[in-house]
Image 1 (tube, rainbow, N blue to C red):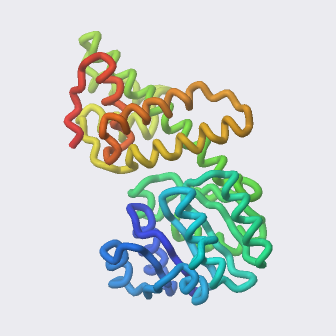
Image 2: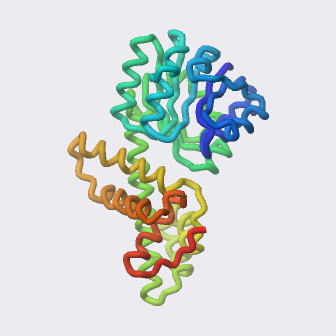
Image 3: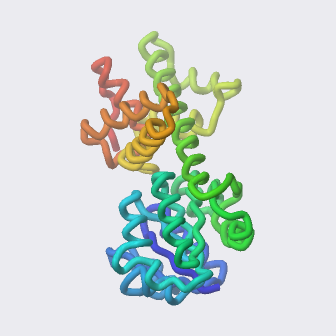
Length: 296
């Protein structure tokens, strides 16, 4: 299948490489050649604009950083919409605003172009291993058509509703992840300040209801003060801003999510934007004057 792909970052590149390994022809665009080069070496064909990518393909995936980038890549002067023929499908796997997603989908529909919003969870490891969780919004027949490609990229693939629903579910995901980070960090801090070995505390909790993937993986990161990304603070900060914007739009009280948004603000203000989100531990340490993390 001829597939367009725009996104060559920590998530996009391994996803594109998985599609290439599955035998699909990829047409790619990116602003930085150094990021595109591994994909080109693997067999992808580079194009000069998003519009040129769409003109060569029937389906185009986008995996970029924020809402502004998605709008520009899809609807901008050289955007996908200008190369896409009626019947083309754009699958946006970025994490962006649900409201913006609905606007973009409506603008594409006027041109006869389909859209799915399909944000993911699972991090760099999930992208590399093809085990991502993919939450998909859009028309069910279009989802059914694209599902074989999703199955190359992920294992838990759920159609969650109409346009924008995938992005709403991703907001929900980021709330749960952020609050679980906070809970694990608070538990480590409390154990430490009571003179209890936090390593033993984590071991004990892993065997009960408190056990989780985050306690397992990111709890160990916090204990080791190893904050090499992973999913960067600046991206989690951006995602929580989307959550809080949606909370305001829908008059939904989210006090826990507001706390995580503030913790991410604190990390950004402290210059920790490039660290893994588990560096939330550092925000708590600073509150008690115990910045023990080395931020490596």
